Length: 451
Image (cartoon, rainbow, N blue to C red; front, side):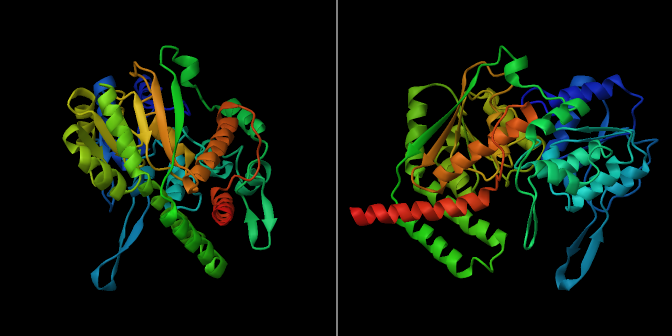
């Protein structure tokens, strides 16, 4: 079920469960912040009884008294070991084995792109559970978040006979290349063929433009912003020097951390312009506005604190479940609350804020699909106005480079999911950014010398 966000995938799957009461027990695995959303939708829309399983140390279930539709958080599927005080360790049993023991007829996994890492514990746990069920439904509006390799775990769980081996999949669709240190699966190839295979096997993919003619169109606007470059160039120069001195020994995670710091500097430098844009919006219209970012010092302390009398906020500090839904309802219905502030991950799925026709994204994420998810919080069923997605981008910085790379990666996703023909090839964000940041800094230095 790969319908574009906002087309009611949850409702469609629940309708299938309502129509097929013989397919029980049914297991629904979802992110923790969506488990109660599933429960509420099942009860309100279809009168279905469900039970939400939470916490670690799973215990056997008595299905004679337990509802036959079980909802479980993705985070508690696998067994985990935690280190306690004093250095002792304790193992907590995950829910996957317990759920497998109830002999489910159908397993449904929401936000299937969260299982892109085939080596992750929760992916392995879900695979064991899924393979015990005759019916399987994977749900994601953005199943390809980064590159074709990310699709394989879900394809293997859905159609193991067609996608039994990751290596054979990678050779055909990931432009696999053997390097001195091992195989590189970061590329993309034969995407049109992959799209046709998925459609033939049973991928259901509808776009809003095709099935919701009454839904107003969505428009993206990139606003270049000039920022003071002294601090940014200093940090960029430090990064390039660090890369030359320690880059060969540093892990990719270390390098990404350094790039992330550079991205954060660029975002902070444009905050004065962002605040001016928000103020002008509030003065020039009576419409509401959704604002998304990543870091707490930007989205909570930098912006929300300034506007909190007329705003609501959902980030990682806000408790999951009913509390977040309450904040959404306040924003949707209270005319005094004109601004919605959200974290790209914490408030990127499972909520509808169509009261806002405009979305302002103040920080860019590495994963294009996260932006698509957020955009569709306002561009979905219930939206009555033309929607505009605004990206203020710091000119001459890593943000400008990342914006262009994200657009390229979104085109590759469209090739696989929607059959739109695009150029394929290496799509690794990190390698491109390192190269382009270095070139960008050289050009800045050259321009400074000329002046």
